[in-house]
Image 1 (cartoon, one colour):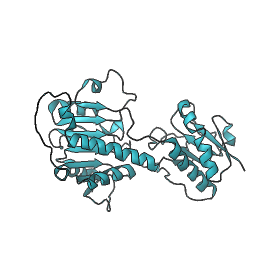
Image 2 (cartoon, rainbow, N blue to C red):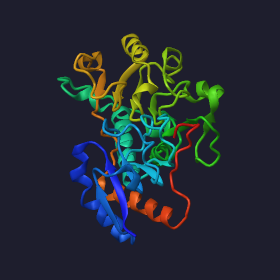
Image 3 (cartoon, rainbow, N blue to C red):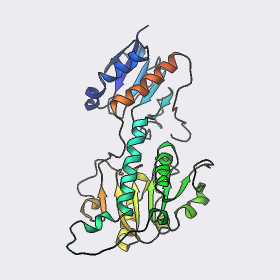
Image 4 (spheres, rainbow, N blue to C red):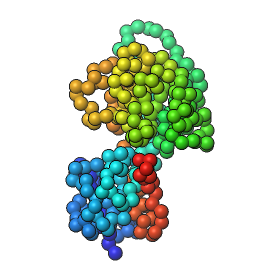
Length: 308
């Protein structure tokens, strides 16, 4: 039987996937036609990224799963019409990209690389060694744990925090509401790699930013709502935060009038820390469809109650 796979995403993504996804399905032994439009009653799987054309999943009564092209599913997970299994994107290449980006940004702040940009003075300042630099990772899912372990391999003093306990991280960890302060207290660099859920929104606010070491660097490649913008701006003005490197924002693209653009102590990165790369993401999608057709458990299925 030939499956019908609906590709529902922004038009710009179609050219990226129209060839690689059918090839990946074929490599998995799946006979399928990849389409951008179809009778909902005939669709077997939906490959999805947020778009305005598909907001009602109720007519897709035959669909066995909705397979997200993105790691974050906060824009879809609460959709009441979505009753099909939802799987998020967990791609080794996406993880690699995130680890590289986080490591580069942490090293940038650790080594004070920005201090000599435009400086016309010979000032010999040596940063501390990594073993003396306290880094806190907020979020110990696949991406956060991989990035934290890379930083630990470079000898940083890594501490982690997650909503639930982590017993095998390889470095000190805290969890839950009571564990947030000891995880952040005295941190010189903080990286946020948490999902956007009601429990994590605003986790870096005026109170928690006050726990950091004075002049700390905040690095956010996770989700924009993890940080309260007003609190971060106030902490920057006060010198409590020395620099913020932000890849994600409450509104994207970041509006031209947003104060982040005008600040020398804020680096704006256009949501590129980790992106789904079509060649590898297609293999993840194809493998999950093969599993579903074989009656096996879907990988990376979203827990609706937790939101990821």
